[in-house]
Every structure is written in C-alpha cells, then in structure tokens.
Image 1 (spheres, rainbow, N blue to C red):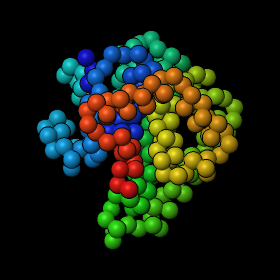
Image 2 (tube, helix red, strand yellow):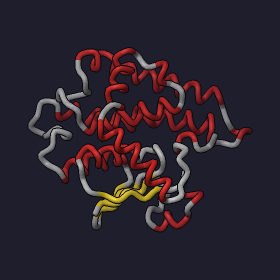
Image 3 (tube, helix red, strand yellow):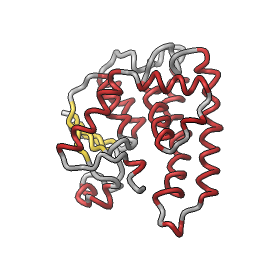
Image 4 (cartoon, rainbow, N blue to C red):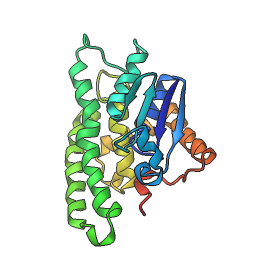
Length: 222
C-alpha cells in the first residue's frame, strides 16, 4: 500500500492528484503545517521535516515532481507519462521539473517574506520581486498553451500536475488575476478534472477525520 504524508494543499497535493489520476490505492496521513514544528514525531520518518513523504514498501520519496514520475512508472504504460521513444520526451521532463524548480520556488520566497517570517523580519520588496520573477517565467507558457490544451505530447501528463500545482499556489497568493489569458484558461481546465476535484475532497475529508485544520498550508501563517 502506498502511504502519502500530506498537508492541506501543500506541495504534496501533486502526489495526491497523481494518485487520483492514476487510480492507485493509497492511504493519506494528514499533518499540521509545518509538521517539523507541530508534529515532531514526523522527523522520525523524514528527518528533513518536509512534505511530501511517500512511502511504498522500502521506497521513501520527498520530492513532489519525482513522486509523480515514480507513480507513473508503477502504471506503465500510461498516457500520464511521456516515454523515451516519444518526440516530446525531453519536453515532458523539462516541464515536469519546471513546475517545481522554476515556478514553485520563487513563490516559496513570496510566502516566507510575506507571511511566514515574524512581522519584524518580513520584507515586502523581496516578496514583490519574487512574485514578478514567478510571473515573468510563467508568461513563457502563454504561446505554448495558446496552441494546445496541455503542456506537451498533446495530452494531459504528470507535467500538467507539476505546473498545475504552481498555479494553485499562485491563486492562494493572489497572483491568479495576473495570469495571461491562455494560462488562465489552462488553470480553469485543470480545476475541472475529476481527479483534481476528488483530490480536494479527499484531503478535506481526511483532515476532518484526523483532526487537522482545513486551512491550506500556504495560508496557515495568516
């Protein structure tokens, strides 16, 4: 059985969404955010204290984009993954990691310097600069999404989950009104997917059952 350690709408949502898209059986363990502060026993499982943590037999993974790739490998063949022999294979890998390394990273700095740091250590200019940094890189997707519904291989893949989570985080940060038209339309399409809707319901139900706040992790410092 796959076990996913998850915080409300944190990076681990990528893994939850992928599990639902692939229809794999799993167990979700909800944790308060950040777990390294509010549930110190989690450090016994993941010394980094970060979310996600995916446990599958002897496998333990903590990188959300890599987890999506791993889950797809369990279901081969699956249209969710672009295979090495396909023309878009390199593009797929690039977009899979673009969602985390290029789009999510700057938003973590917006969160840190807008909300998570104590009031006296917050730096609005840094948060503003990294929000602009994120939006500038996001705009590179506009011509790609103006030509197709999804990022690569003319179909929905794990790369869309990776980038889609970055858009989800941007919405929590109030950046969605600044999306370009094709990116905004793409984000609306992703939110209509059955697996996305199920993943949202699963985390809400699990959080309620396990006594964890339903406040999304990106907003938990408000």
